[in-house]
Length: 569
Image 1: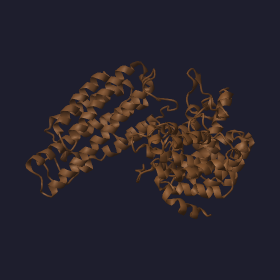
Image 2: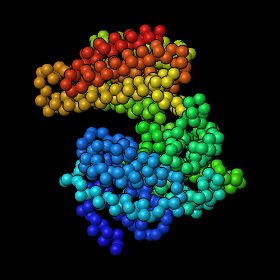
Image 3: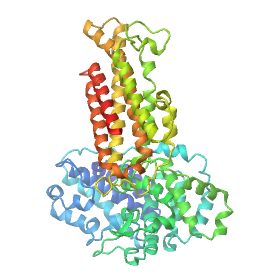
């Protein structure tokens, strides 16, 4: 029977999974009789089954557990499928005391010879068998879309010139890769080079985890945490491998073994909450393997090749230009999804849109059409608050510049180019700011900075929306008298809103790049940041479409600048 015949026979019975393409791929892989294909099929069918069972769980619940064993032990599945079916599922893919197929293979323990085809076949029979217990259609969660792929596509353009043969030779001569899994590693390269990045990642990530686990156990002298998965022992997972500590007081030596840059890349790709978290997404069936971004796959392949090259004879590596290019890329890598990186990225976005204030104002403060497009058209010289905010802002800038023994004017400081130059200052991210509840409060500071600049972005966007709406109404002569006064007030207040927000963004930039110096005054500093956050939140409220309270924004800005000056003094 062909794969198409099988699918035609089972089509109605597997539609409940909403993963017909994955199941078809599993059948196709089983037909090849290659052990590596059977291994890949089991990885696919276990993640597919977990996702489908999670959708069933959500028929009666609002949040799906992150672990398959919790889904299988739920009353919802027992109610829908019955205790016998659930018991069978638990025996095969359930907790550690079961066969535990899902965890054993997704954590990279077995070789291809150790995975019998009967396991994959059994699960592929289970999938259509479960249909009979379901009543009607099941709502399905949409696959995860990886928005981070473009960032890697941009930074990987010049180094992705490895050939399949070169990568395989590199792996064959590297002591990093367990020899008993070399066939699986070679198959990963074949999948990558035949433009199947999703399938390549499904196979490569468990193998990479296991190879890292082996090195972790060697360098940390804990052989008991390495090679086997046992029912009575919790094995070492990727989160522990990439953690700062082996135990509470013992530091992980893996970073010094493979390099901090490699660890940073792995955490970016696999563990940081704002990153793609590709291992979690693929293993839990959240991502579509057939549309998986090639750039993310390339990033994992490149860092993997670099790790393998570190475990080769030195002469084998130093002569290969492509390995030198990879090494250069790895060594210069800066985290993309660490909290510090997120703050930097958000500051860049906000300074860019903040610089567009002038072009969004099409009318003068007297509501005449602008002709010269200079500041005099939109800044009312009789509006005393303008002078007051400039005075307060200048005082704050002078106070800080005096502290740092530099001389800068307000025009130089509140400038996107200057802020961009400050953001080029490197801030240590490795094993930093993991939480806000530890002894130091760096994590809380970073979180506050991110919230502040995010609020600034919202305020600017709301002001631009208000300008666009009211000015369009003015053009069309549909503004009522009260709305006309509101637009006039908005244009008159824009200078103060803009200058206040630009100062706040500059201050967050200063905080970020000087965070190492804040240790002795963290409590006072956090109190100041919370005050600034409250200010930006209030601005957000005043500037939303329901309020449009522009003079309140001005008064609040002046009041806050005075408070800031007191904090800095």
